Length: 107
Image 1 (cartoon, helix red, strand yellow):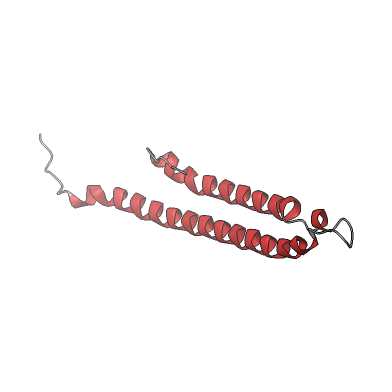
Image 2 (image 1 turned 90 degrees about the horizontal axis):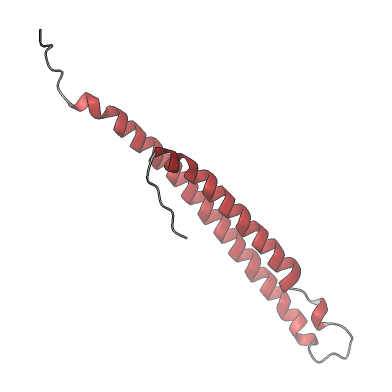
């Protein structure tokens, strides 16, 4: 994912964009857990030859859940970092005029 920040408003909106991406990661994880990592497709009957794969779906589910948690946590951490950096950049920007000497007024 590429994020292009070209002005202050982009920087201020970025945490919200990252929150939306985290929501999408949660939705994808929920879909994968509910529909991809299903045991029932491998357990239609007690004599189904695919039945051992049903147990593997527990591992698949756990992997999807772990990946989802990791993605959401990483996006939250990034969003927090963006907020901290934005505050520091804005404070630095606001302090720039204080770095220049005051010139005497010309009459």
